[in-house]
Amino acid sequence: MELVVLDSFDTAAEANLIVALLESNGIEAIVEHDEDVLVDPGLLANKGISVRVLKSELEKAKSIVTNNQKAS
Image 1: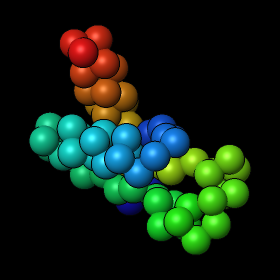
Image 2 (image 1 turned 45 degrees about the vertical axis):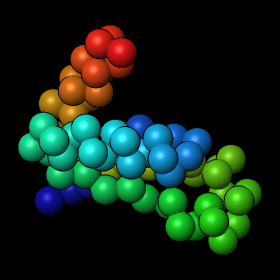
Image 3 (image 1 turned 90 degrees about the vertical axis):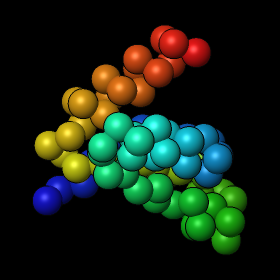
Image 4 (image 1 turned 45 degrees about the horizontal axis):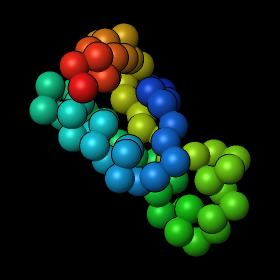
């Protein structure tokens, strides 16, 4: 099972909202680098805070996020 980056965000709050949205739609997702940024804020400029999903669910996850953004 390979995890891939769905998107990167400037804040952990944004990333966690996307994870909650995905999980409410049956897709497992994780936030990556949120704690690293607390230790070294310079990492935010280089890596951002990533949301990762299974590669097999990437297209479905993208669709869910896009549809949610259109509805907002």
